[in-house]
Each structure stands twice: as structure tokens, then as C-alpha cells.
Image (tube, rainbow, N blue to C red):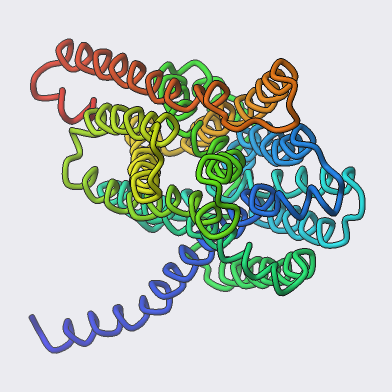
Length: 441
């Protein structure tokens, strides 16, 4: 290689350095944005006692407040995928940022339950864009091979926002007013929005990928093709049942369940949801790494995760003699099992063409939270019925209502097996040279 060639390569590397750094910062900011909305997602469960006292809420009203986030989240989720596919990440990020900032400000001044409903709806609308923005930004800068590892990292960092929004937030609010904390975190959100928007417009490298708009007919055609793709619906249904325990049990009902079962209302109860999220946070990158190392074993991993989730949830809920270490261990394993939704994201990335990927991910993410939203309300209804039948104001256990949790893992196991059989038949029907390349398992 000549001296001029070496100088040219050095100049190219120097020129690309700002782009690489900007790409990393974009990935980091979009992931932190997702983490921040996760903080708001778990806040009603963490602030259960304070919300009940400040707003005089019943269990049913509290579950409705928590569910409002998910109502908006799951309804807007597929729309967010269409917006990203049609208008690009930049506009979607602006919409999400304004919505989350408005919701946080509204919550910080809430005085009646109606204000909580509105704030949760706004937070849910903005939050519905968050994960898709992070995954779409990663699609621009991360190769397909390492996408499972990347998505696992995104889910792990996102769930760390839930950890901050649980035990740490509970202890901080013992010192400071919880509405003041929400007020100041809203400005952190605003800083992320401003910085990420500036990066997208500052570097022309990102504009074709993150600002490109598509013709209306191509967008509608992509939507039609996505809606008729059986793989999208099977993976979405699988994600619905795999994520249901996290979206209902861990976020809202785990804290009061542990409080009653263990007779502890402070340290142990507050750390119980954190144990499940710790498994989720630690498990997400590990599962992503395993899926990257074993690209043709993704469905087998999902089958194993469903079995572990069923066994661990049964142990956590139905253990007769509750030991806090045993319960925490079960909850941690359950969190690891749920972290396998990163494989569902990777399979959508594998099976769906790039131009339809945001729409497919939007549908899949909507389904992930649909089951949790429905079961969240169902558990509240069952608890109220049980209390009425027992003639008491508060149950000593939630064993009947929480049957949703292990049942959802069983459904995830069954659907994983169905998808595995379906892909196996497709592989056998293809020429041997094309089977592995076209139908990753």
C-alpha cells in the first residue's frame, strides 16, 4: 500500500469518527428515553400507598389509573410504527417527547383522579413510541447479526428505569414530595429530546435513514402486507403471553401480594418487584448474546424460557412457607424468562423486510402490552369479587386472581411450540441450500 493510500485511509477514519460518536450517542439517548418512560410506567404501583392516600383511591381506581397508561400505549403502539415507517424517526421522537413531557408536567400538578387519568394517557402515548424509536435507530447503525444483542441491551437499560422507579423512588419519596420529583424529571426528558433532535439534523449522515419519508401508497401497501403476515401475528401473540406477568403482576400487584404474604410493608415488599426486574435487566443482554451466538436456536430458547417462567411463577405465588430468599429467587428467574422477549424482537427483525419492520414491531409491541392491560383489570375485578364473597375489606392472599401469571407462561410455551413446528415444516419444504438462509429458527 502506498503512502498516499495510507494517508487517505487515515483521513477517512478521522472524518468518520464524529459520525461514529454521534451514532453511539443517538443509540444511548434513544435507549435512555425508553428507560425514562419505563420509570413512569411503574410509578403508579410504587406510589400505591401515596396515591391511595392523596387521592383517596380504591384498589379498582388504582388499577384503572395504572391501566390508563397501557390503554394509550397499546392503542398508539401500531400507529407509532406506521408514523416511523411513513415519516421517519425524527418526527416520531418529537411527538413522543412532547407527549411525555406534557404528561409528566400534568402529573406533577395533579389534584384529582381525573388529572391522573389524563397524565397517564399522555405518558402512554409518548411511551408507545419509545421502544420503536430505539429499535429503529439501532436498525440504522447495528448489523442484523448483532441485533439480538443490541435489542437485549435496549430492554435491559429500559428496565433499569423501572428499577429506579421502584425501591429507590419509594425511599426518595419518603424525603421529598413525589410530585416534585416528577416535575424535575420532566426537564430531563426535555434535554434528551433537544439533544437527539439536534444530532439528527446536525449530521447529514443520519438524514436519509432517520428523516426519509415514503410515498403514501408504499406505506399503505406495507401496512396491508404486514397485517396479512401470519408470522407477525404468531410472534405478537407469543409476546403477549410472555410479557403479561411483567405488565400486570410485577408492575402493580406484586407489591401488595408480598406485603400480605410476608407481613412486611417496607423493605422486603419494596424490593420484591425490583427482584423481578433485576432478572429482566440481567437476563436481557445475556439472552441477546445467546441468540446472537446461536442464531438458529431462538425458538428453542423461547420454549425453555416459558417452562422456567411457569415453574418460577408457581413457586413465587403458591409456595406454602414463604422464605424471602426463595421468593426473590423465583421472581429473579421469572424476570429472566420474561427477558426473552428480546428474541421475539430479533425474530421480527429476521423475518420481516426492513421497509415493513417499524409497522411489524409496532404490532408486536402492542400485543406485548395487550395481555397485561386486560389481565390488570381482570385481576382487580376478581379481587373485588373475592372480597365481596368473603365479606372482608382486604384479602389475605391473591392466589385465585394471580392464576393469570402461570397460565400466561403455559400459553407462551404452547405458541412457541406451534411456531417451531411451523418453521420446521417450512424448512423441510425448501431446497436444502436455501433452508437455513431463508427460514432462521
